[in-house]
Image (cartoon, rainbow, N blue to C red; front, side, top):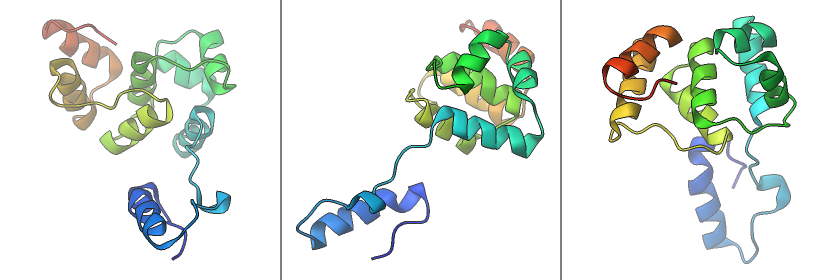
Length: 141
C-alpha cells in the first residue's frame, strides 16, 4: 500500500495498514502535522504578502506576529481566525489552519462560528466580519 498523498485519505490508510500488518505504521509513513509558521509562510508566498502586512491586516501586534512565525507562540483561535480573514482563506484552508494550530474547528452548530463561517464564505473583510459578529450579539474576533 502506497503512502497517502493527502490528509483526507490518511486515516483510511492508517486503518488499512493496521488491519494488514503486525506492526504500527513505520516512521516514514506517519504523517506529521504541518507547523503554523510553515503553513502561514506557504500562504504568504501564494498571496505575495509580507509577514508585517499579514499581521497589520490581522490587527495583531508585530511582535506577537513574529513570535507566531518563529514558532515561539501558539496563537489563540481568534488570532488564527483574524489571520485567516487577512489572508482571505477559504473554508477548507481556515479549518486546516485551526487544525494546525490545535484549535477547535468552526462548526455551524455554534451561533458565533456560524456567523464567522458565513463571513468566510462571503469573503467578508475582517472589520466587516467583526461588525456582523457584534450586531449578532457575539464577541468580535
